[in-house]
Length: 401
Image (cartoon, rainbow, N blue to C red):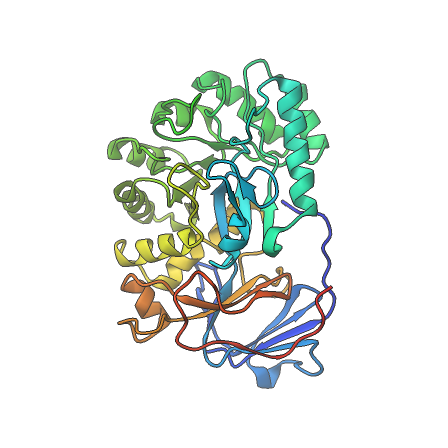
């Protein structure tokens, strides 16, 4: 399981008067209940307030009839150092994503570092540094799983063992470095998998200098764990090749904001045709040339639901429970034992939809009124989403450690 250094939170959080609980679980996306109790940063119980132990909370939140969902997971980001991205020379981008409901990020490679080392010693050192740095530092409270080396020619099995022994759990996008042939990538992906390192492969046309076209044949031969941005980052493969990828393997189908929207919807629909919606996960593939999108995951949820014509509660699962299972995370689901990463939201003011689910189904974004990470309130009303119709309220709050 992907894990960060201990950031243990002590105390009891009660969120009561909830109008709707989205579980993040495709099999049961809406839960019965109006209250969630969290203890020491983890979800303890979910149900109706009258049946739960809600006495003496350290933090008490009244949701005022609004919706609680798991914190969103961005399956595809490119962090570098701290909360700064050299790609757009922008500070505070991770904190801005938190204001868009993202509580966990997965690095697909720290590829934008100026002067990124491509020698084997250098790339391994950089991966360990990124892994350590983001384990110790959480911008806005967001858990950034980083340290994802881009594989290069000349790497041998021992290099992957060394990385794993040092705590590296991810590979950067296969294809962004010198390894672009299917047979060569397959060997290194297998070594990574042997030592518990999860892999993602670039899919589609080139995105940054040094990358190249990775077509369906290469993706299938490499057999990475995640088909990275199957809808292109930015340029997508032909729809026939996207269908081939969906039909010919059982790997994760990652759909991103910074890709081709037609291809995104086609990939999602194909997954449903195959009766495999659990394979669909969402990312932004940012920071990138098109910028930084703090609301990118919410926009993908809205796109999948409105243009893709699926229930909003199902679309939320793509960015929560699906990703958590695919990435082996301890968040993404509202159930006892999971980490208490929650967002409280409501339909946006003046949305044509009468409920939050109806408004998202009609293409609107929800308004976030609170983000909770590890049982701690990280922000109130979001500075980035449209204002929520009704806001959650802090009734009692302990001191933040």
